Length: 324
Image (cartoon, rainbow, N blue to C red; front, side):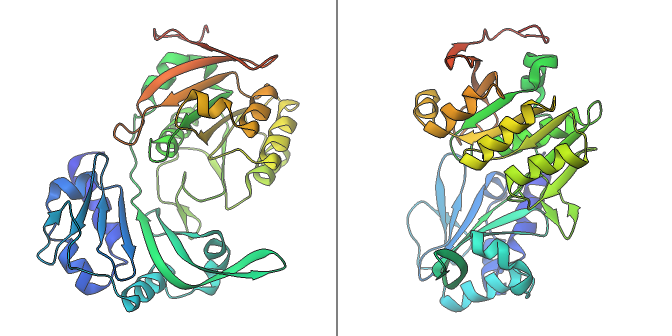
């Protein structure tokens, strides 16, 4: 995505803001708009713009400061922005609100913080919204070129690991798009971040993929196998017990899984019981470890997995062409 497209994405994401905030935020330098990853709004606090290497605070004149500024977000601002994100229909977004996030037009995603309303030991709603984090959706076409080039035909059964904002979802999206022209690819998009579906229409280019939007990953994987006969299933942020069970079920169907998981480094990943369970299933024979948020979609290392005892060996950095 080029400089002007990045600025347009920032502008589109900011359309949900109240008028007086949007007027000021539009005055930000284009250099900040083009690299901004998040717009964070907290009741009675300064507005912060999160970029890969640092965060800025919005000043009343539209300038950006590295220290807190006197431009505060009021409770009324938060309430109005929340309604705008929901397109003034909170009821139709009830499930997303319950899960703490809402995907809105353009594929942007708003994380919602507030007071949980509990019923039968489950969160059924939120009230008294206190902060909103707008994650700006940006496509980065060709971001998967390196991983596809290095792994070739062996790209199936790959687990992409990295810390938050390291580009896992962006990379999955481009992998799905590129592979979909020669394979039957199904995306199980529980959080609506890969395809960024809004009213049934993907807001991002996912090529010829079929997409199960909003399905819990486990159910989506099984539904894809039953109804869509995919060659490859792609899903984001796996790690639960149900995910592992469903992924195990996919092994007997001849379907490859490409997925992502949160982990700052290989040691952290291997110390997680859920990760050990997933790797021991044999569903993944490669781990792609990404760098941090300062270098989104950049590969740190690629490792080969021996699922018999979950041994990890680093794959040589040279191009693989499908023979690893």
